[in-house]
Amino acid sequence: MWTSLSALTMWTSLAALTMWTSLSALTMWTSLAALTMWTLCSDHVDVTLCSDHVDVTLCSDHVDVTLCSDHVDVTLCSGHVDVTRCSDHVDVTLCSGHVDVTLCSDHVDVTLCSDHVDISRCSDHVDVTLCSDHVDVTLCSDHVDVTLCSDHVDVTLCSDHVDVTRCSDHVDVTRCSDHVDVTLCSDHVDVTLCSDHVDVTRCSDHVDSLCSDHVDVTLCSDHVDVTLCSDHVDVTLCSDHVDVTLCSDHVDVTLCSDHVDVTLCSDHVDVTLCSDHVDVTRCSDHVDVTLCSDHVDVTRCSDHVDVTLCSDHVDVTRCSDHVDSLL
Image 1: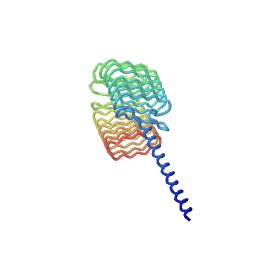
Image 2: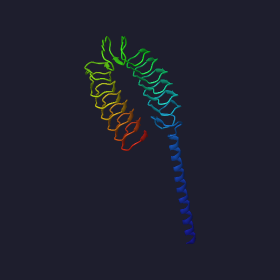
Image 3: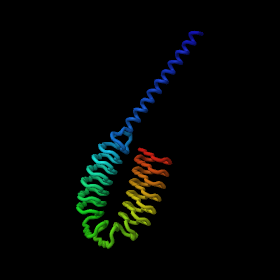
Image 4: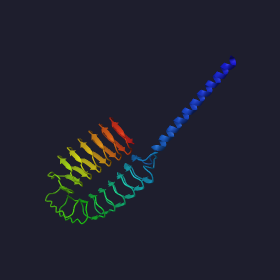
């Protein structure tokens, strides 16, 4: 009997030691995996990893990213991307392949939605949106907003406070006033602007008129219904069958997919939609959301929430302040 009890005691101790060793190994592996997944090499850097088997330096396959500054927000949703940044407060969103971007100034916002794009900028406060192939852009001034939606377009801007959108070939634009924003997306277009601070975009038929100041609207598709009832509204519509209602100030919305329904009812909301079938409802201030996957349902009701969704079938609900998620 004593021998049996001794054997039982030894077996129990061995089992406990084995279990403790397994738990320790699991804990160490989990900590190592978490450390490897979320290691950042600079302060206040927000990196979105969009590929399977998430790694610190990779968002997808064949991605090369170098972060050299503070407060950098980078979203990489495609392969073969080379990003080099050497300034502060740079926000770059890359949604296409074969993109080479060099940023050497502060406060630069660049959105690349096409292939084979080469951008070099050496000025501050430059906002560029490219949605076409084979685009060559040279920016020589400050406060320039350029939107390109056609192929084989060559634009050179050398004046201040100029906002130009080129969506077709053979476009002749003449402007002789400051703070005028004109968008021409068809051939043989005649636009007359007789007021300051007015942004008019003529990209399709059946477009409602704009009679308010400080309104920036870009319509690049047909059958678009846009209602603007506030000042300082910036809307870019690049897809078909889009219904957008804006009733707040300082709203920046970019719609690049089909069948998108967005309702904005708060101030200072920045939304970028680059996928199909996205339903976003937000009722808080200072919300920055980037949706790059399909079938995403996001509901947020808190302040200062930064969420980037780059995977499929993601359901996120935020109810707290100061939440930073990388999915």
